[in-house]
Amino acid sequence: FFPSLQVLLMGKSGSGKTSMRSIIFANYIARDTRRLGATIDVEHSHVRFLGNLVLNLWDCGGQDTFMENYFTSQRDNIFRNVEVLIYVFDVESRELEKDMHYYQSCLEAILQNSPDAKIFCLVHKMDLVQEDQRDLIFKEREEDLKRLSRPLECVCFRTSIWDETLYKAWSSIVYQLIPNVQQLEMNLRNFAQIIEADEVLLFERATFLVISHYQCKEQRDVHRFEKISNIIKQFKLSC
Figure 1 (cartoon, rainbow, N blue to C red):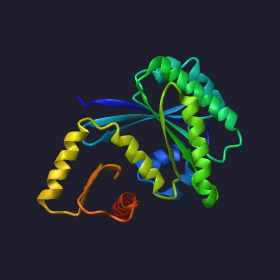
Figure 2 (figure 1 turned 90 degrees about the horizontal axis):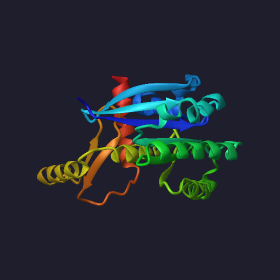
Figure 3 (figure 1 turned 60 degrees about the vertical axis):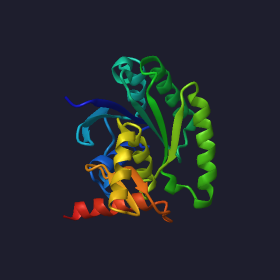
């Protein structure tokens, strides 16, 4: 028997949910996601994680008719026993009010059916925003989302499939799902000290997300985890 965690991946149609799922869990590279079609209703996938943890990932199609169904006839089925809600916003969306309305409907259903669920918002496609505007736009969006989410709490990330931000966000999300994480970190620290390493990283084998790390020396490159993860993943794909 493997413990199973239900993860909902939601957001408007075209926001990039299936692309990010395919990159993280199906070893797609960014340019390959262009051939992915729209998700019809709910796509279920079971991902074995850290050996004996199963992520039960529900990728929920974002067309209006599906979204309305999720909050009415399918409400109990979809929002019960949810461990994590990941809501994806297209930063370039022209229908921000509608996006926020759907997000709030999601939160109401979560509050009713799974009040202890962890909530993450991904402000996605940030590569489409001018570089000098990114910090400001993300900060504004984050403030709006945190305010709208009350009394629930949400953690926001800015993401793009074209750089390391997607890995960083998903690594942070997955980290919060790991049972016995303190024990794992203690073992990693002991291991690093025994082999006298400057730094040790622990990757999840299937996705190459960074689960944990321990460093003895200060490292300069803040994106090094995601870069290493990408290099290993590309190498694995080329073998």
